[in-house]
Length: 274
Length: 164
Image (spheres, helix red, strand yellow):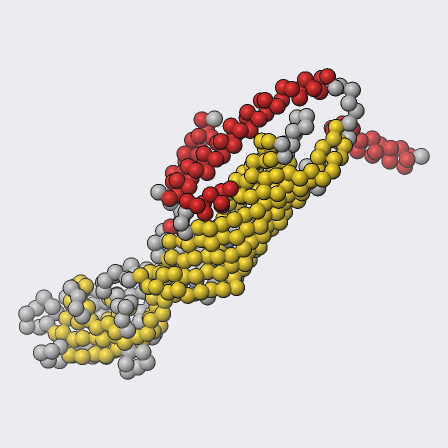
């Protein structure tokens, strides 16, 4: 039941953001088209560069409705080039997992650093982002085994009792790579709403003695010992730092790259002939 | 659009049952007894109506025409005692012997789905396996006991050989 409500909630959030985005574009497209027509003589287009900071609402809301979860994640990105963003997430999680056979609590802090590539071609002055990216994540955490049950396929002497353990495993760590796909849309001036899906792959981890890292802060539940999935829903604020002009030639250059190469080669050949 | 909805529905239906949720590994092992012929110790010998009962429990089973019996050990105690009645179908020929296993236990983590398992180590001879006669003495049908391994970690091997 818990999972179903979790799922419907996140789906609702995703769908809502789609609506928000759709309205956003339809409203803002038209006047911009007009403005470009009117100000045809403007020679250069300027784009804003800066820092965007925000918070993951998914973790924040989960902390309220899920009794055995506490989590906070701060997100940030810095626009490096026209399409590349340096991105990072830092967070803290405290989660108690109650499985059939084991009950444990994981506590820890994580940081993820990487980049996003914006594949979205914006109209006019819009700054929306549909991105793919990579992250390198590191987490430092501890596990507490609250209780466990012995799996006994032949319970001839009675069902195995739940054993209260309380054993602590400190100083654990994990490192992983994340592939991120996400989008951000500007809903008000400088305020962005976005979400992202993540696929995680563990690189290395320090496994507790006679237990396993079944949950890793930032990485989430471990599947098959090495895989994980993630999701976040962020609200962030963009702090503009400077503006850079977009060279009108650039798009032309991209188109004729192949031709340029040819001409270079031809010119080289010509040089050799000489 | 229809395809996307279908795909979503499929992922929802299958997201509930992952491989991780089913315990497929070998967990708590049973003690494996193998029966041999005392007059020809390298040959296996089938038991005849061997009735096996754990102390304070209902009958585990009656084995006939087999030479291997797996006995569950008590995972909450360091002692498990079994009554083994050979020829249990006969009113005159039945012979009861008791086998008491003394061991230490260790709980080992297996996986998310299985949790922990218990593995056993039989105490050093002669205390690992103790053979006693029934309360109304009828002599021993078990002639000799040979502990192959004291480590009971898997059911894929024989732990104790019994000669009769």
